Length: 124
Image (tube, rainbow, N blue to C red; front, top):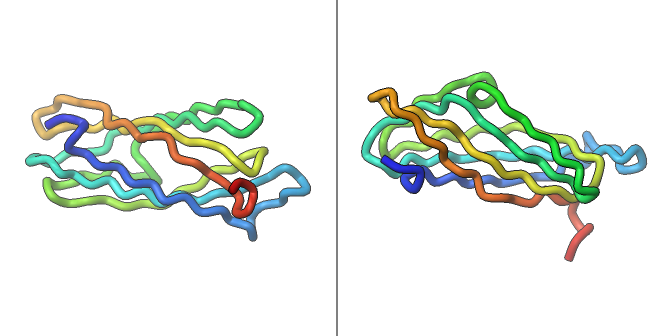
């Protein structure tokens, strides 16, 4: 199975009630669905994010699993979780990859295409 068998769909949301634009603090949640369209189970081992704000500030985040879990995703199944990030600007971009392990122990990276974080009505 290749990374092409893993479909990653992010849905970001601006959290106005947790943000303080006057303090340059913008909080976003993102819900990600990882769909295993392959023919074998995979386990999400770790993640790596590159987060870039509108000022060009880049933050790398690496860690084991997601939201404290290392979910196994069966063939034909999906896994959804929600997490969050804060930025110093009202707009930013996230991208990265998940490290997945097949049942035979081999591992591969599934890329997460760049997606935009944006406070509503900031960009047209």
